[in-house]
Length: 413
Image 1 (cartoon, rainbow, N blue to C red):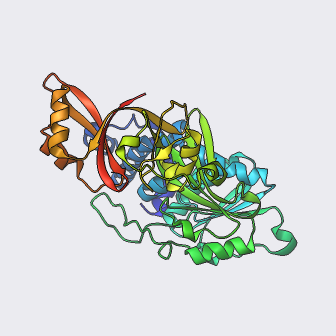
Image 2: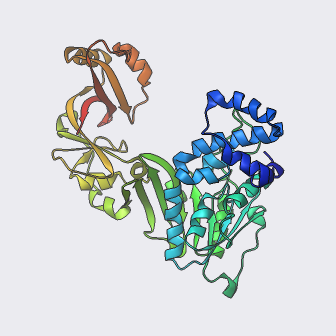
Image 3: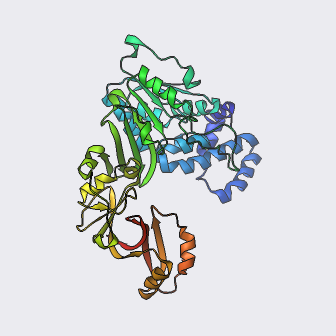
C-alpha cells in the first residue's frame, strides 16, 4: 500500500467503504471482495480496504475500540505500542513539564496519539511515505499534531530557549527493508547497531534534549544502559513487550526497572527492591527445597531483578540466573506466580515417567528454564501424547538446582 492509496482510504469513497465493511471474516473475504467489485468499487481499493479490515481486527487487542477508526500497515501494527503502555509513556512527558514532543519514527502513530491525548503538541516524522500518511490519518482529530515524511536523522531540533519544555521520543525501526516472508513481514533485527536511528544517534538526541525516551527491544543488554538513565522493561499480561530507556527529567528511578502491566493496574519493581537479596546464595541441593515455588513476571526477569522476588518471599533462587525461587512460606505477590511443590527429583526420564504413571497422570504441561531439553521430545519419551486416557494432567518445571537438572511437579496455588 502506497501513500496514494492511504489518501484514498482515509477520505471520501474509500473511507465510507472501509467503515461500511462487516466484521472481518477470513472465510467470507473472497465472496465479499467479488460483491464489492460487482457493485462498482475499484479492485485495488477493495483489496486495500479488506486488508485494512483484517488489520483492524488484529489491532483490537492493542487498541480496543479505537482500532475501528485507525489505519495500519502490517509492520506498523506489529511494532505499534499497546495503548495502555503508550499512555504510560505520555504520562512521563506530561509530568516532566514537556509541552511539545518530537516523535522521531512515529510508525502508525500509536505513541503520538497518546501524547496528543494529554494535550501535548506533537511533531511526528516517519521515513516511509505510506506509514507517514497512515500516522497522519490516525492523528487527524488532534490539530496540535503534525506528521511529516522525513528521516529522524534529518530533523533539526530547536536549541536554546526554543528547546525549553521540549521532549523527544524515538521508536527506532527494528526491521530491515525488503519482504522477508509470505505474509509480507520484513526481517527483524536485534543488534543495537542495526536499528534505525542507530543507538549512537539515539544517545546524541538524549545529549541534545534531556527529556528523551527510546523504545527498544526487550533484549537490550544491561551493560548498554547509559549512566543516570533508566531502562524499564514492561510486560502486558505476562508478555514482555518493550524496554524503554529514559533520560533526564523522564527518569523515575535510575538503573533497571520492570513494569508489570495488567488491566487491574501496574506494579513497578526496582533495583532497590532487589538489593536486600544481595549475597543470598542459591540453593545448595534439592533437599533444601521449600514447600513453595515462585516464578517472577518475565519483565522482572528480563530486567535482572529476580533478587526482588527472593527478598519478597524470604526465599532462595533454585540456581543462579534461572529465576525460580523457593520458600517455606506462602506469600501473595502480584507480580509473581506461586506453585505448591508436589514432588521434586533429579531429571531422569525413566524415574519421572514412573512417578507420573504411579500417580495417574497421562498428560503434562512443561515449563522450563535453564535447561536445553526439548519439551516435545520429553513428552514422547514419557509417553505423554496429550490425548487423555482418563488420567489427569501434571505441571512439570524443568530447571536446575546447584547446577544439576531437576524436575519439579507443581500445582498452581
